[in-house]
Length: 350
Image 1: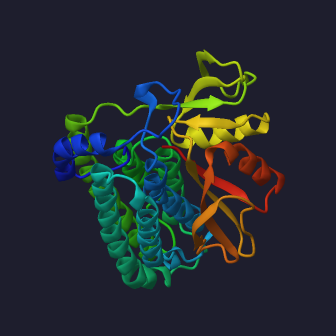
Image 2 (image 1 turned 120 degrees about the vertical axis):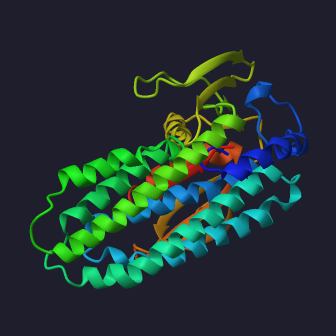
């Protein structure tokens, strides 16, 4: 619950957080993770709508980097995919205690994104499309800037909350680096207006969110405790694997690895060593995974929750499925064996 919250939400969560923490139940059976690293089993599912708001901007950044007509990005369809994913997640977690704080956060970011995407789509399909029709070049300088800014934003939010992004620095780059003279002035000044408006609004909103978040939240835990079937071989490229000292007679070891985007990378690395996961954040049930592959492809293991077309890549789809934690590493090894046909998008940490 780290990416977005509205100012009102932050204060509501003061008392909802207490309800959620009481309702969240640890998995049954032996749990090896320290208490501070245990998280409720529903969170692997609830994090997908959050991460869709990383996947969607990533698809947008990739599209406008090479598209002659950026206005054709399917923003309305992305709104639908967000709510489709949330509905599927709700159906899946009905068996767990209601996580009030997390649901409220997802509703707030979902409504905020719906408004943002709807306004942007309406503008792009009218004024943006008319200005786009006047240009003679495939891409004007401001469109190139928009692609670089979009990719910088995506790279940032894979690791940090969106409201910490420096929108003002991007605004300065827009006006300092892009030449103000040259051909296609209608399209270029229309893009400057649209980008300036977006950056100013997001900077103002981010400051409000930052203030509310600092008032209510402690710093989020940046690591996840895992139990592996055996000790991992150290590697300079993965310095954040930290053993916690537990080594059992069956060879299982307790360690921590980064959360969020880092969890996906470290999971792939550990799986490539032939290791298996025994426990993640105190859970031994299922973990959510998304992969992208051809329309005809289906994962060889796990329960498919839903599929989504990659709207800017005809013939490709996202498959979101739950796999037993004990079988996660095997599923990741299978993905690696497919080379470029199937790509691991994310492993959804708890």
